Picture (cartoon, each protein chain N blue to C red):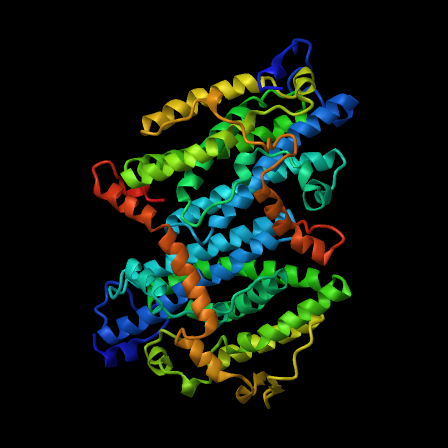
Length: 312
Length: 289
């Protein structure tokens, strides 16, 4: 299949491993799914911090389950990316470890308090839900299938985050203030989650032409704003004055993008932000510390005693 | 008192029959003994799970991360089963966990030990030693006189089967590699003295058996545990310390004395609860948890 035919046929769940896809498509799809899988792993580095902070046993259990879901999503997505035949999972994990792998901007900011839990679990995950819902109609079928399961579970995560936010905003005045402060810190990052307006984004045009991506960054951010600004206000959070949010002629909301720090965003996109070093470095150190386990597993699987199902 | 002394002079032939007691049938002494037994169970599970979750995201592979998370969640779930029984006896979740003096916790010191970043061997050995012990003590509770406890033992036992298989398959794989086996050995040497603290009696051990709350003595359970773990570990080429020659850690666990790492851990997991000061810990049954 050449690009012209791909563009012509592009539509929801249109292509799969049995189709002879051009390299440009396979590379674009791999880049997108790998980014998504990496983000699940690196999101886990934030979310796992909340398990220790959780102020009730049920919250703790819900949090461990959420962290497990994220690793499960990463597993699913790396598998979907492998179906394109461009990179193996080990290669993608290696790229993540050595700092080449890219992932969502919000996961380049380390966390250390429970007040941050709803920022990630409600707002960032809520934003991810907006995007992932549209990816159920991506043209690469294995990716769309992964999204069916991911979206189902993300629904629970967002509820978990919303419940934490509601509880914090019903807490003492001090707790409410801390939550508001944390929200103000995270809000611009969350708005940048969707990336810059369409024409600034490098890979968007092609990804949309071949149906990998079905909705523009701008549309996604606006759909997020329309849904989440009212929710934030409902729980008593005040939307910061900057970045300015305005209502368009059609009644939908948008953000003045000039109010956001795109230098920081692009530094992050190159994995060069100070938080990038910290998060990627932390993962590299922890992975390195248990490399002896992986080596001994490789030996085991290479030996007569090893069986394929043993590697859990 | 050594672990064997607890059996002296106990005659439980008159103990109440299996599942014959409900909350209102408990004598004051029986209730105190039941609380001791439940706190030992619950604290072990909670602290074990709290440590296990430190490996989430950091496990050596995606698959081992997912499997470890299953085990940790099961153990938190068991902790909840036992803390729920304590709450039926009048305690609150705050009193059981969040506002409890760290010196009152009665878990074995085995489960409070910290993990080094490369300590996956520690995780494997600890989980194995713990899970065999858990199977033995749950089996000893199948015929408990306390009906609400009897109701819940089966669920926990069913899950432990999977945990033990999981730990055994890891032991087998790592023990086949020289470097990995050395790490397992180091973990075993370090943890074994603390594992023995699983079987230390508490203050009300005699009453626990007199009231039929548990049928087996701690000494016989300890014996069964040694008869299982020693040959298994030796079969994997590990050297198990001689139990009677092991020098006992100062911290006994079951009497509320603990290693310093416990106090740091307790401080860390209660910090947010103290700070936000909610009216009560959130309950999410049937919702998210």
